[in-house]
Length: 211
Ligand code: 2DT
Figure 1: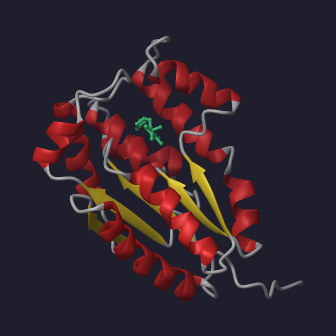
Figure 2: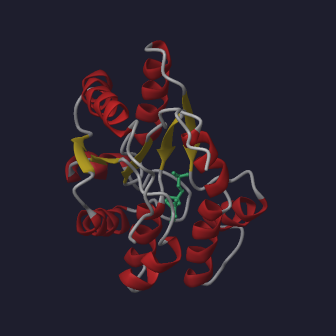
């Protein structure tokens, strides 16, 4: 059997409510890891560029109504269609920075009233992240930032509910980072966490989520 000797990349996931600064922090992190000489790639779920992603995009932009369970399964399928390429990338030594993952899938669908364990099941067996960085925004700031947009979930009460479900999903490989400070201070904190994670996960096997 051929055993790969290339140290693998890390799977780093960012989670949080809308407007928690995930997208900004992901971009800054990728930039600084590249400057440190790391091989790194940015990904985002939902990936709206695939056929499944187009259906999700139409739903989010309110141009199409779908049953909550159907939408949930589409979001999950949108991750499964990326999984082989993610595995290949990680095994080749490239770190993946992922803006949302299965935890958003559960938090947003359970906030609509679907059963949490039912929501978890289609994502069982995805690649387990080495670290989930949860960006938490305090309620005051969230109220200032929400009721802001035209997409389906951009309402304060719904976002509070999503946040509470995220808290229930936390596991030891999660790290909470307060998103209330300046972009640069938050970035520094994240950079330290991620650099340690990349170093520590190089020789660890890739594991499956929730198995
Ligand atoms: P962005 O604003 O980050 O593009 O997300 N969502 C996301 C779900 O309901 N289920 C999922 O599995 C994922 C990944 C969160 C668009 C919205 O889609 C929600 C906000």
